[in-house]
Length: 314
Length: 314
Image (cartoon, rainbow over all chains, first blue to last red; front, side, top):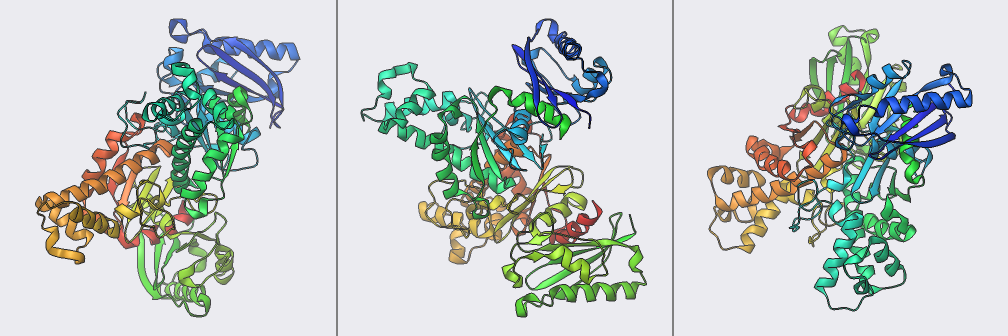
């Protein structure tokens, strides 16, 4: 294996680029703007120009580069074909082939951003001690990724790791962003936690400091109050942990991972959140799967960059 | 690849053995008794003797044998270590290594019986047109297997494919065989369907021919009556399909398989059962996963034998 590789994480507003040693060290990282105009026709060439400039700056020759990994905000098939990236203005084409043509014929591999972030955590983050992990990202939505034997499971249509759209509630009347009702995301995303808090306050007259926040309450507020001992906030966290822990036990019955890695904005609640999930998981999961570790993610916004590099290295 | 291999399916009372051409044809199959006495010390040597005798009978030399695959009724790790086979009297040891020593140093691979049956269906049965399948076996219990890219996913502790122990009901008061409450198996196994029928009859006064059977009613009776148009029996089948279809949609959100293969005794209800499941699946699954095929298993009791052979061939 050659000495260096690039890990690229393409978002709707910025592209994060990392220059890595293939043994696993991040040498340098920087960002460029994502130019989405004209169906995003400049995005790949901007990235290639930026990588070329970095190589010149560092005095590194192309012969020392193993390849480029790239994470994209949309479904990506195993061969590097992106099906659609609405946020980038892209339709369907083979990104890996196209970018390789544009970047001196070097090896390029592409993956979905959530899947790639999971691979990053499995390589150098919260899952670095494990072979088989499931990452669950609790942000505005709930995403995830499945990494078995160090490889991303993409699924037939690139739909693997869509943990947020597991069906967990038959009684839900609100529609999820995906068009279904009762998805895990509706209760465990940042907005999901706020939804549960609102429902709790409506359903009971118990005093709770959550009421002081009114409609402006955030998931962070709920977790902060719960840590301070607010009974209502703790009831909301318990409910959220109940949905997530049970969904994790169903995941375990299907693929029995060695560890679950919990990331995204909501995971800033830290070990308090992990404890709320882990108890429910241990109580509901198939016994043989009970010793799976449950850890916080460690790479934050760099996970995608690391994981894209891992597409090349692993 | 050499011309022949063996596929062995070890059960608690009989061992099924198949001689296969490695291109996929079953040449001969037969059964021997499983001698479980003295901690099952004779089981492997009985199998080896039986395979030797078959080679002599057919005039096939050892040089023409690629290897032996063996399916076992207990958790099996990827390296061929069986953790425990209560039904055989076995503790923990590496079956693949042990059997290879006993059978002329040939390659031996071992797998869990349910996982191996899934691989058999993926190779030559209901899943033969697909790369990534999930098999769900609806029998006395509910088992399963996950095959991705033609390989069994065993999971960290051999617990992958334990579909029957996905948590699907928070309200259940009865304990499942696994020690938890609200497992899929409690509603979709043969006994699960009977349980749902019993609860239906208790909860309503509606006339139904199910009542004529009393406590002796079987899952087959329920499906037969449903096909005849009995309203109560159809309500029970719909409820069973609801549990299973929703669990499948959760599976799809995790690994997005290309096809689900439904086997086991309950699957003798045929396309009627598939229709009951498929509608619910399509309505609840994440849209990208919606076109997964749902098929009946095709190999019946031979699936394990085929799958064991596939451990060697694939």
